[in-house]
Image (tube, rainbow, N blue to C red; front, side, top):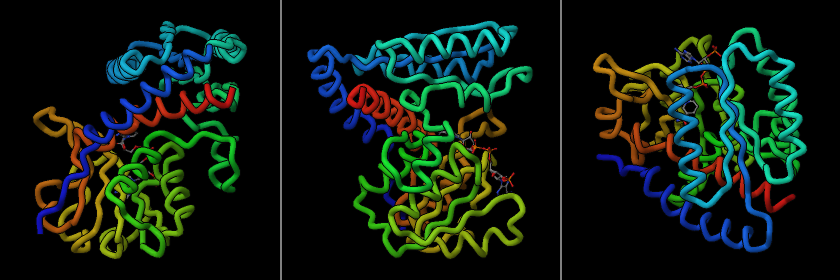
Length: 282
Ligand code: NDP
């Protein structure tokens, strides 16, 4: 079997062109969606991510503001900027690019963002809404993008066994909650899982969100499984790659996301979706 590719770029293009229409309508009604992105310091990877987010906003017609601060900014100064943006009616979403310098408490910064503008979905109030199934929060963009890809291939999650490898607050845990909300039976694996392969081999849907090149090999995948690769790693040649041994696993899986061109573009697409949603709610 050779797996079909879940093309995150193509799906992103389709969704973003629909978003551009929505933004036009909102703008005409005097509610142009606005996103503020805060970048602290000079982390090169963060600079690339932030640039891509701003570019995506521009292409969709979303008003965007990039605030760049030196790594020496104090926590109090950063919190003051967030308070100002919380009160800015032109801004519907606030994103603080992580990681932050060590002298700043990232949790305190995330909790300072108004839940109404928490388009990254990292605030405890968004996490709680996802956990309880209550409306009003925002779903974290990366796992939400994964779910959109499963929806796009028409995959019915109800009754299926989903295995998520990784339990971070930004990917693994919210992914598991979203799959559970769709009535999948969910297993969460992490670094203390004794026999990872025994778990992953049971998966109808396997989501890898670890950050280790080729952690998931073909013998760890059930024939016909759907494999979603969240990982973003650099291999020995410096090329971007995921957590899944793509070439080997695609011979076993029924559907698979590539890296690049899979989950990555969908993450930004769902950020745009959350920003538009926030403007609609405002
Ligand atoms: P974290 O480092 O926060 O979490 C990694 C998780 O993997 C942890 O739960 C850890 O377990 C688990 N883990 C580590 N080693 C193993 C192992 N050998 N077996 C099983 N589990 C293991 O990473 P993130 O969740 O933030 O990101 C994961 C990956 O996804 C990274 O490559 C990141 O770059 C990528 N990413 C991609 C995005 C995109 O847009 N495509 C967006 C966000 C992230 P434990 O908790 O026990 O330590």
